[in-house]
Image 1: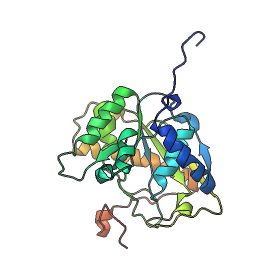
Image 2: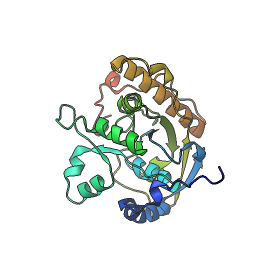
Image 3: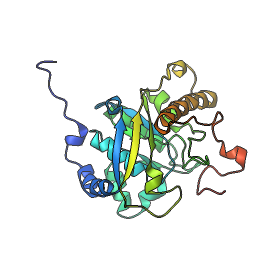
Length: 252
């Protein structure tokens, strides 16, 4: 609108992210080129939960790099133990990353407190609804956990689904090796905000969260089907039905 003041983006303000980006982005550029679809669906301002699929331990680096290139500052949920590692913990705290403690911990409410700060500050947080790398043999999204849905419903934060394909060529699931050459192509597609209106007036209990999480996972899976040109299995992979742990390294 003519005469309206320009809103200065969070990324344009000097911060620790400038340091991190200067270290990470050149390395990522060596490993991968990105083909991003629907980049305009990532809002330039405001509080949002970004919900991607997850099948490689390098996924957060790649998703974070794209979000940064599109003008937003990426914040993640990260294991609480990392915040107690010297230097690493300082970077995580200084850059506003969100600690997640194991179940039963006295610090277990921190993600929800952080969600409130995200909503109040108009920030963006990246939450992997699956909670860990998918156990699905063909790398389709598995059953989700309720973190993203809870953040969205408790604090009225929109959820933007994201799917990507190609990071497994850079770092295979549970591999400790990174392939730098040849340069890999990673495709990423953003979707419209997930419609959670049906859950807004319901109690935020396990039934509501499970249903809302399924809607979020459906949106992510549809985007991945479009990227891969394939149909996902009719039934989403459930680790408990296959005698698998839902955290830790995959046990075939």
